[in-house]
Length: 304
Length: 118
Image 1 (tube, one colour):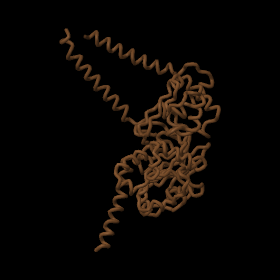
Image 2 (cartoon, one colour; image 1 turned 60 degrees about the vertical axis):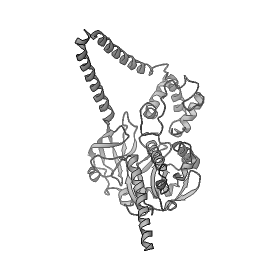
Image 3 (cartoon, helix red, strand yellow; image 1 turned 135 degrees about the vertical axis):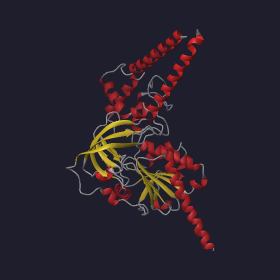
Image 4 (cartoon, rainbow over the protein chains, first blue to last red; image 1 turned 30 degrees about the horizontal axis):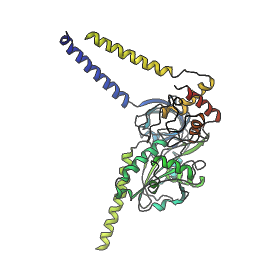
C-alpha cells in the first residue's frame, strides 16, 4: 500500500518544494511598486529628480526626496517645475528608482535645467575648504584630510526612513569595519558624515550617533568624523557638491549624496541612490592606492 | 499514506489560518480612540523599521509585540511608559530621535498603542 503511493507523493512533495522555492525567490527578488505624483524641484548632479511628492501610501508620507530615473534620458527631458507621475520601485536591498516617468504638466517649468548642476563642482575640481565642527567639538577643514582618500556623505540624525540616512550610516559603518582589517588602506582613507541639521545635530548629539555606528568604540572617530557646520557654510557645501535640502515641518528633506575626494582634495566621483557598500569601499581603496602609487613613482623618479 | 498526506495538508492549512488569525488578533485588543491614533502613528513612523526587515541596517530594530509584557525593554531598561517615551523622543543607539517630529499627545497615543501589542 505504501509503495503504491510513494512515487506520486514524492513527486507531489518535490513539486511543492519547487513551488515554494520559486514563490519565495519571487517574493525576495521582486521590487515593490508604488505610484508617485509630484513636482520636480530640481535635478541633481547625478541625474536624480528632486521631487516634492504627495503621500505614497504604504511607503512614505508627502515630502521632498530624490528619485533616480531608471532611464537616464529622463533627466535630460524633465525640468524643475514640471509636474510628473511615475512608478516608484523599491528593491529588497533598499535601492529605489522611478520608471515610466510622465510629465503631466509643464506650465510651471523653469528656464534653467537645474541650478544645482550648473553650480556644482565637476570631477577633478577642488572642494572648498570650509570649517566644520566634529563630534568632539573640534574645528576641522577638508584640507585636514589631504593625503587621504575621503568619502563624504550627508545625513541628519533624526531621519527615520530606514532606506535613507540610517542606511547610509549603516553602510558607512560596514566600510569602516572592512577598512580596519587592512591597516595600509585604513591609514590612507577617511570617512566623513556631515549633518544637514546643525540646529539639532550638535557635537554631543553627533558623538552619541557616531558611537552607535562604531559599536561604542570612540577610537573609530580617528577614521570616521561626524560633523556639522553653520547654515551659511552648509549652503556653500551644498552648492559645491550639488546637494538639495529643505526644512519642512522641523524635518529635513534632502538629496542622497556621497562624494569621493582624492588625496589632493579634488572631486573623484559622486553617487546618489544606486550604490553598494562594496562599490564605495572599492572606489575608496583604489583612490588611496593610486595616489600612493603615484607618490612612490614620484619618489623613485626623484632618486634617479 | 494518502490519508496521512491529507491530514498533513489540513494541518498546514489550519496552521496558516491560525497564524493569519493570530496576526490579525493583535490589531484589535483594548483599543480606544487614543490607541487608534497611536496605531496610525505607528504605521506611519515606526512600522518601516519595527515591522519590516531592513537587512541594510547595522542593527535590526526589535519587534515591539509584547513590549510591555516583559519587565525589561530590548535595551535592558525597565519597561515603563516613561522609558519608552524617552526612547521615542530622544532616540537610543541607532534609533533616531522623534523630537520635533511628534507632539507630546502623539507620543502618549503611541505608548498607549504599544500597550495593545500583546
